[in-house]
Structure formats: C-alpha cells, structure tokens
Image (cartoon, rainbow, N blue to C red; front, side, top):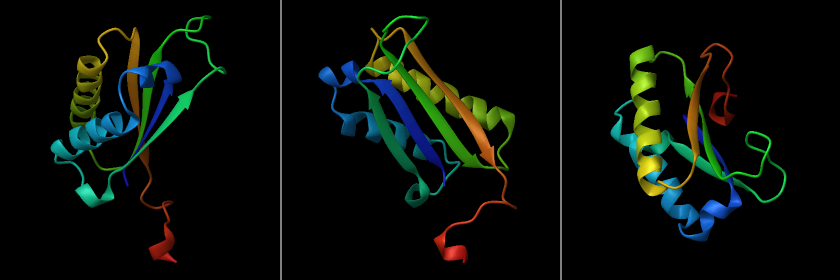
Length: 115
C-alpha cells in the first residue's frame, strides 16, 4: 500500500521510457512523506487501440491512486497536484493528465501477511 496504477496511451512511451514514468510517480509519492517507501507500488498500463478521450484517439495519462484511509483531504490534494505537476513537466504536449485518489478501508483490507 499504496498502489499507483497509471493508464496511458501507448504513444507517450515513444520518447520517454516506462521506467522513467514509474520512477517519477514513485519518487513523488515518496517525497510526500505520506508513505513508507518500501510500501509504494507503481504500475503502468499502456493502451494501444482500445481507448477514446473526448470521443477521439487523444494522448492521455490517468493515475489511479489507491491508499489506506487516514490521510486528510489536504494531504491527498497536495499529492494529486504534485503528481500531475511532475507528469506535466515530463509531458508538456499531452493534453490530458489527471489523477484520482481512492481510500481503502482498513477494516476490509487484507494481504498475504494478514492470513
């Protein structure tokens, strides 16, 4: 925990390696001081054909952040803005870059070490 899943159009990987994007999101999340670095997980899912943005095939990046409940709205807003800012610097030509943050409930979360 947390998980940052990056959906994007495949064309964004033409000039920037996936590892650079993964590292940028990881480092930005780590620099927020909201998480232990060893717990941060980042994945990237590029879409080649099966997507539309505003009804057209437009370049995009969307980050889905899933974090354990307990952070304030202000902390989550700052994290969102930080990640979008860093991605915008990497990809100034991409018209759509966004993130949303969802909270996991501690009471219903389970992982391998808990069973």
